[in-house]
Amino acid sequence: MLRIQMIGLALMATLVMSAVAAAGASAAEHLWLVNGKLVASPVKVHSLGLLLLTDKTAPGGETIIHCHGFNDGTIGPHALDLILAITAELLGTNPRITCNYVKQGACESSPRPLALAVGLPWHTELYLEGTEVRDHITSDTPGGTIGWKVVCKAILLGTVTDECTNKLTSVKVTNVAGGVEGEFDAKSSLGDCKVGTEAVRTGAGKVVGTTLVENISSTEKLTFNL
Image 1 (cartoon, rainbow, N blue to C red):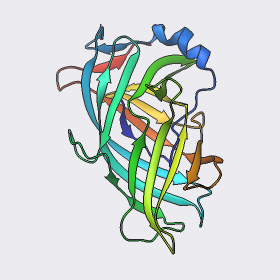
Image 2: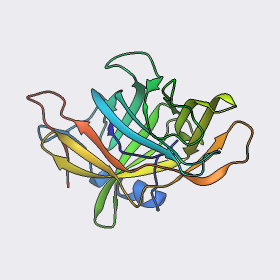
Image 3: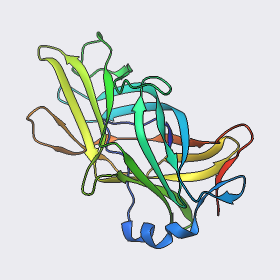
């Protein structure tokens, strides 16, 4: 499961994979391992997330918020993993993550903005794209969307919700000392955003930064095979 350590922008749609077919064809070549052994059934994992979420064309001006929260989910079997919940506290139940403004746009400085994940559970799968191993992310519901809602108090408008989503995303993954790190990069897609009843603003949401699938424990190292 992904430790979202995302410096992302958003109201986010999470990310792009240019070839979905390639994901299906290559996923079996890149599998989750614990201490070098194949993960044959789901294993629980938890992680801290750091996010920077942006709506580039939000009504009243670009809005950027910085958030941190916790992920709860599983890795395995094989190339698959699942993000079940993203919450404000480790092993908590509160899905409303309190954030800080980097750029306020039309939002007032107080109260602080809230971020809520959209479309959970998120289904992910390792795959090969060119020379890179990436993790493909979609909703676990067929045809569903993934992304974020951001709630703020807007000047003159009161409380508003800005939602940015898309149907799929991907991150570049690398084996690191702490587990498997994923990078939200230039191949990561932009999200489609909407506030209230306004028309959808295509490509207004953005995510960049890193994700981390953490080691299972101090004695059980998580990797994927190259």
